[in-house]
Structures are given as structure tokens and as C-alpha cells.
Length: 287
Length: 318
Image (cartoon, rainbow over all chains, first blue to last red; front, top):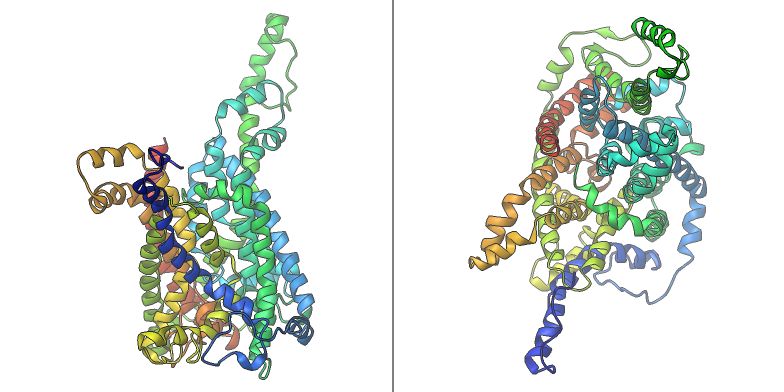
């Protein structure tokens, strides 16, 4: 990355300037970054503010008075621990489902030839235009027929495989030389063993990206749980948070506390998988 | 199968060394077994999409010709639902809003994410960390995004505070007809631009450096190099970003639902909100299905574009 050479000579004035000039480019970038993360900072600082500070025409970026009790207060106002648990269960199911099935399908479509494989690929591409928002009514009826209303499988079911993941995995597996697979076959390795020992280790970046996005997408679901869940035991946190906001008289600062708590798991997952995600980023742009 | 077993018999009778162990009839041919494994890997996905994507799509089209309230059986009504929709001013408004929203956010997302990617691609030290920080906006739960921005865009919120020094008085961003939709589009860009920035970065990194060096030797300045090297080579990526962000925006629900509730009036009501309300508040499943079909038709256009792009990419890859 650093193609710029060290300043020539014994650091003349010009050399010094050249040396530091490259840092100068950081200034506009830093301004942009701050502009982008300002709302996140605002959310965090507001979650510690006193309730009445919200709409005064100044923003204390560092609260004059800290109110960490916003957090326990908010959590106790509605069944948020349950809501978070529900969201976690559903998102983990969706994440694992996507990682497993998208890897299988991606592998099958990248390295195997079978009659109609092109059509399968196109059909999967077509599902991009069939998100739950479009097929809301009939998908609801399908889940209803299965008797899955007000269950975890009802929320997670339709999300367990996403076309995005399949294309991501296929793209990633395409770049693995087929010779490796052939060699393993000649050595007598079973197909599942090849998948586990050769394909999966080479796809870690893509798998990490897939895990983060699948978790986030499921964590974000609102319309679908709103449609299939009507009892408190199975509500996910976004439903709880909206009901909480509509509840007149709940301080917005406490809403922000819940929002912060909801943000933490996604950021954490990102941080944990970040080592691989960074390398996998390049892939997400391909298809 | 039969043909193969005869050849097996011949081989067995011919010489023992030609086929050391006679293959039992249930053992498939090596190549065929691999093909079956391939099908097996893809099969769960095919079944899943049949049940949860294509089945519902067909069902939606079917339902759109019926009147159904989940209590009595669906009754065939022909094109009545569509006729009703066309006559409904709220539907027409929502359709226009959806199209405006798709156009606005797609353009803004594409321009903003390309700009961000170019800024990151200058490779100033620390650019990587800036990229990661910006990407956080894409990971924040969308419900949190909506709630935070609803407060920020409040007439006494942070945006008003930040604009005050520039002599801009308080604006009722989310509650006035002219600004509600642009405000939601801006928030959408804030949310999604960092994701597409990463996509663009991947595209930028794929451009060989020699091209820039050659252009530099020819005396092309920064702007000229962007116009004649970066832009043409980035065209497939731009196309991809446009299509995907259009598909993303077509399904928008939560942002208008939380930030404006579809208001003021119907200024930010979009089709997905209408589907939910018609289907689940008024229990008019048939009519909701008809709206779904309209939304589906919009997305079909972009998917066709995406498919063309995809096929071209496949041909290049071989």
C-alpha cells in the first residue's frame, strides 16, 4: 500500500512537507467519517442523558449528568430481555441456516455440472425480486398453513436461505482450483470431506461476510415478525421498540438505550469476524 | 443402466484383470455419483425457494384475481382488484412515491458511495479505519437508524442545530410535504452508501495500475484519468450498484413506517406499507396480492437488467 518513498535527503523542508502531505489527505476523509458516525455517537450519548435534554437546541456530546439508569429502566418497561432473546434465537437460526445451505448450494453450483444447472442459477437470481415485502400475503398464508404463526420457525423459516449468500459463496468457491477437488477425489476423499477440508477453509472470508450479513438481516427484520407474531412471548426487539415508542410518556432517551443495546451484538459479531470480513469484502462486490 | 450391466458381464467373462472387482449394480458410475452429489447440494435450496419464493409468487398472482379475507373461501373476481387499485388515489400516490423513492435513493446511493470509495481509495494513511467506521452505519439495526434519525430530523433536533450557523432556520423535515421524502432518501443513502462504497472499492482495486500509469505518461490529469480510465472500467460495478440499490429501495418499509408513518398526508406512503395495511389491517388479501403483483412488476424490470449483467459476467468468466 505504501508506495510513497521516504522523504529524500536528510529531511529538507520540502522533504518534511512531502512526508506530512500524505496525512493532509486524511482531513476531508476524517470529516466525512465523523459526519457518518455522528448519529451513532448521538445515539450513544443520548442514551445517557436526562429525559428532558432531548429537544433543547444544544447537544451536550458529553452528558453533564450521566444517567446510566436509563438502561435498566428501559429494560424493565417492557419484556425487552425476552424480545432480545427471541431476536437472538431467530438470528442465530437464520445465520447458521444461511452459512450451511448457501455453502452447499454455492459449492454445488460452482463445481458441479448437472442438467439444468444454469436454470437453477437464474431461478436463484430471480428470487432477488421476491423479497418478503412482495410475497408478504402468500408467504404469511404458507406459514399459517404450516401452523407456524407465533413460533420461532415462523419468523426464521422464510429467511433461512438468501440468494445473496448463494452468489457470494459460489463466487468465492469458483476461485478455488478444481484440481484440488480432483486430487482429493483420487485420494479417495468423500464429497462431504472435500467440502469440509478443502472448500470451507478457503472460503472463510466469504463465510464471515455471509454470517455478518445474515445475522444483521434477520436482526433487522420488522415487517415479517410484525405479520406472523401476535403474542408477546415471541416478539422480537424491533417490534418491542416500536410499541415502546408509541407508548406515550416513555422518555426517548430510554428508547436510545434500547437502540444502543440492539446495536452492540451486530458490532460485536463484526468485530469478532473482522479479520476475515476485511478480506471477504472484496467478494461482496462481484455478484 | 441395462447397457452398462451387459458391458460388465462381458468384462467379467473376458478377463479378470480388466475389472478387478465387479461393481455391484447399486454402485453408480463414478461420474454420475459426483453429479448426484452436486444435485444433492443444491436440492435443499431448490425446495426451499419453491416453497418460500416461487410458490408464494404464483399464489400471489392467483390471489390477486380473488377476494379473500381468510375467513371465507377465496372468490374469483377477475380484474376487479386491479380496477379498484387504479381508481384508488392512495394507491396511485403510493406508486408514484415508490418510484420517486427508488429513483432518488438509487441515484444518491450510487453517487455518494462512488464518492466515498474514491475518497478512501486515495490510500491516505488511516483510510482503512475510516472505511470501517463508516461501514458501521450499515450494521446498525435499521430500527435504531429510523428512531435516531427521527430525533435528529426533529425541528429541534441535531440537524437544525448544525444548520443554524449557516443561516438555515428550523425545517420540519419529516412533517412537511416537500421535505419528508427527500429526508427519507437522505437517510437511506446514509444507511446504504457505506455498503456500496465497499463494493466500489473492490471494483477500483481491480483496475490495473498500469492503466493509470499509462494515462499519466500521456499527460492525463486527475479528472481526465477518472473520466477515461476509472469510469469506463467501473461501468459494470456502477450498473451492479444501481440495480441492487434499486431492488433494495423497492422493498423499503420501515423507514417511512417509523419516521413519517406514511405522512404527511400520503407523501411518503410506499407500496409495501400499502400491502401490509390492505392485507393485515383491512384483511383484503386479494387486493393486497394485487399490489404485490405491481411491486413485483417493478422489481422484475431491475431483475431483468441484473440478469443481463450476470450473463455477460458469466461469459467473461467462461
